[in-house]
Image (cartoon, rainbow over all chains, first blue to last red):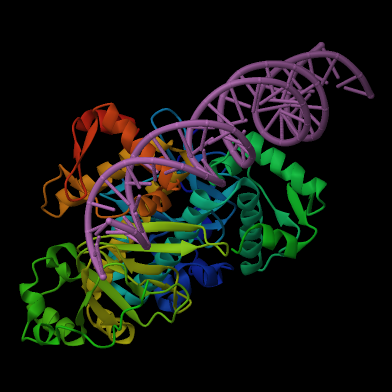
Length: 245
Length: 245
DNA sequence: CGAGCGATTGAACGCTCTCAAAGTGAGTGG
DNA sequence: CCACTCACTTTGAGAGCGTTCAATCGCTCG
């Protein structure tokens, strides 16, 4: 996956308009929801809006963490690798999610686009300074981190204790619920990621993911549609098979 | 596991001394590290110090989250359950760790003591108010949550992609490193939790945990000592078998 | 000394993985 | 328009790791 040059924003023109954040359609989902117009203007001053093609690396595990990002469109995956190449995807990020939290000044995971994406990039120094000025923002970020933490714990339950079928059903439900939260229709579910990505997210192999989809399809619980969409035929059945979640 | 009555602090005398936090030996590890003497005094005013016996519930998943806690001694486990009783332990907390982050005003997991513990209890309303006053504290809490998040991602990698032996070795190393960070000796490692707890933390069964310990023992990599201690005979071997982490 | 709980060990099963091959679809160039 | 490539997905067969079920051991406590 070729890394993309993030230092040169592509649509800088739009980003440096008087108050692009004020008009941001996804603001309510992000860190920026907490801010008033003046604060948004200050935020807009330090941010770059960047487009990233599908399957490009935004940053890599271990790199100096000198920026925070916010996804404004598209899907991003975060992952960690073992020395022998085994991979665990720790999360899929969508509109409104942020990434770039650091430990010891360096990124703890690699971030790669699944689809083409728009992201807002905040230099860490400047955002840190701004957080000191706007405690509301710090609070919002803390609250978002808390939610991430809760989601991470749900994922641990899934990885450690659920069967393949339960994992797939939980995954579909999560995608459905996240779409709904973003004002998209919750069914059919748009599933932009590959079988390999799904497998590495759920702690399975691509073969098992594929077989499980086939089983669900055969059982009439789902059907696959054009354009990477999955129609959940019986939401209750899927919910039961996910064992609550 | 009988719940303990947390409304009635047991050693209130100590907690309401002029400035108990100032003398707190584990302060550098906790949220409180960021505060100056005056702020510590304010914090001491709203906190209760509580002792909890081993194997008691501090709070349960779903309960109204009206307090934040800080572990000052002992070991606490956090877990989530599936409807059929399968359990995933999402973390073991030790001196300096905090618990009680909420989503939708209610706890996302159950917290239960492994050993007898001392915890500081902060009513949520009062701590929220204090955070507004002391941004330093908010920042510290955010930074601790970030670290938790990174740890959660490491755990996902472990649960999704590591073998039983790698899981056990990673677990022992984690305990060793956390002990070292707290100024205890890193070897032998004190392992206060049961095989069942270890299993539910690593996504295994008690039998597999037991068998794996036996294998490591037979291979000469570890040996079991009195008082729930594990001597790591060859740290490098264990490290290699953990596949980095 | 017996009860009871946790840890260990054994044997057999099964879910998921591994290895392998065939199918599908988008993109390319003749 | 069609063959070709390449990547991804699906399907099949067999193996293995960890589980399940069961028995034994060892320690603590009454």
